[in-house]
Image (tube, rainbow, N blue to C red):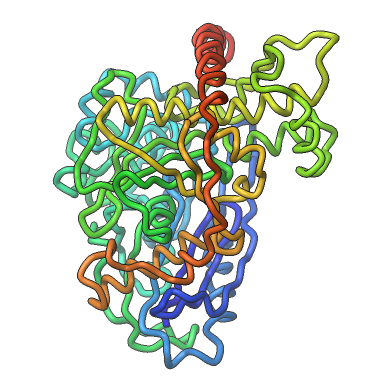
Length: 488
C-alpha cells in the first residue's frame, strides 16, 4: 500500500492506494485561503500540516503494517519565510496572490535569459518574483529560510529538508537543464542557496522513515512531484497525449524527455521538470473554473451549472458577438499580464445573461487554444486532450474546448478525475520502489476503465471558432494595454 498526500489549493487529499492503482480509501480536508488585504491569497502552514495528519491517520487505520511508502503531490508557486528554527514567519503566498505583480516588470530585463535557464518566464506567480516583494514588505535582515510548502510538511514529518526537482521547477529558481539551483535566478531573487532545501529526484526513495504519530514504521519516503505533472502520470498520458485541466486553473500540459522553450519572445509556456527524466511542457491560465464560478455566482444569479448549461445551449457559437475576457485573477499564461481583468465586450439590449454565460465558456476555451497554438508552433504535437478537474463534468464547456482546440477530449469518471494527481504520485512511488523500470510503464487498469469516452470536435464548429478566436485575440490586445495603464 502507498499513502499518497495531495496538497491542493482548496483541500488536502490523502489516499491509500494499492500497488495495482486502486484507491482503497481516501479523505479530504478543506484548506482556507485567506485574503487579509486586496490581492492577497494565503495559506497557513500549520493548518496544512494538521490537515495532512488528520488525513493520513484516517486512511491508514487498520492498514499501518501494510504501508510501503508515503509520497506527495503539491501545488506549485507557493512560498513562505521560516525563521532560524524553521518556524513560519509568514503564511504561504500562493499563485493566486497578485500583490507582487508590480515586481514582474523589475525582473523583465533578465526575462529571456532566466526563461532559457529555468523554463519559467518572469511572472508574478513565481517565488522568484515574490521574494523581492516579501523582502521589502518584511524588511528581513537576519538569517531565514524559504519553504515551498511540500518541503516544510516533509520536514515536520521527518526532520529532512528536501524538495523534489519537479516542485522546485515551479519556483523559477532551479535550472531545468542541470537540475540545480540557478545562480542567476538566485541573484535576481536576492537569496542564498543555504536558505533553500536540498534538491532530489522525486521518483526515488530518499530514506526509510518512521512516523510514530501516524503509526507508520520503516516506510519509503518518496518526494513525488507537483500536482500537474502527476495528473499526466496518473492518466498515463505522454508525448502527443496531453492533460487538460479544468480546475480552478485551465491548463494544457504534456510530458516529454526534451526541454522545450518557446522560440517566441513572449515566453508563452513553461518547461518544468516532472519526474524520472520527464519534463512537463505546457501553460496554466489563472482563469479556469475560478473565473467561471465567480461569473456564475455574481453575474448569472448563482444558479446551478445545469441551469447555466441549459441557457448556454440556446445561444449559437460566438454568442452573437458578445466577447468575455474571463481574467478574474490577472493572467500568467499564455499572456503574462497580472493587470488583466474580467471584461465583457459587445452586450446590447438584445442580449441576455445566457450570452454572457456562453461567451464566458468560450473565453476559457480561447485561452486554451492560445496555449495549444503556442505549443504547436514550437514543434509540440498534441493529438488528444485528457480532461481532469471539476469543469470536466460540464458537458457544454468540454464540447466548446474540443471544438475550439479542434482536438478530441477524453473524459473520466469524476471520482477518478479528482484523484488523478494522487494516483500519479502513487505511480511515482511504484517507480521509486523499483516495481517498474520507468514511470511510463506504470499503467493502472482502475484509471483506464474509468474513461467515459471522447468528445469529438466538429469540423464546422472548428472553422467557426477559429474566426471568433481572432476577434477575441484582437480585443484582448487592445484591452491589455488599457489595463496596464489603469491598474498598473
